[in-house]
Image (tube, one colour):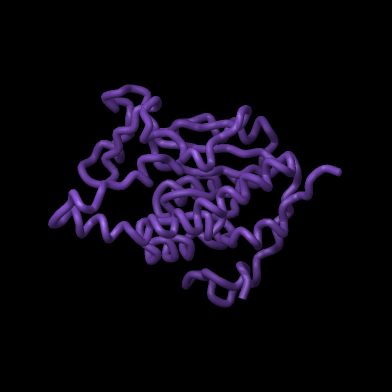
Length: 233
């Protein structure tokens, strides 16, 4: 099986295979979403007990996937895009005020999504393993979608970007919200399965089935690389 036949939801059982994407230099960009320190920082489990320790262990598969699969594949794609002269963008969650008053409602509600990430604080910074290089655009947002409340759509349009390759976290939240916004703005989107993660594999797989073939084409890193423009001679 390939990306054309895998990850199909109920809606697309028996549908024709999608066409091969045509990715052109100057028209395709890599968008790395919310790969920030806050999501990989972990407490010492020896200091935890009760529900906190249960939660720690529940998140262990996510951290294992991030370190073994998502970060290495993101690094590989960054290296390829940079070596071939293709555009790289980053999006991150960060509020402009230290008290977080400028955050969207979804980031103020109690619970896991209650994020207070001042833009200059360590937790809000992009992981050092995949740090942006000089000239690469970083979009700061206080929303799930990287298009909502930012100028990213305008920047893409101004630069002639028509195809956006999305990686990052969390598949079922900020990645999905960004993908849906991009699709609604008529960008062609590719989501890289093994360069994304959700809190659980069940959530990850389920969300990819929802967005595949309607909001994006979902493929793995090796499949994507076959379509990327080659480096200039």
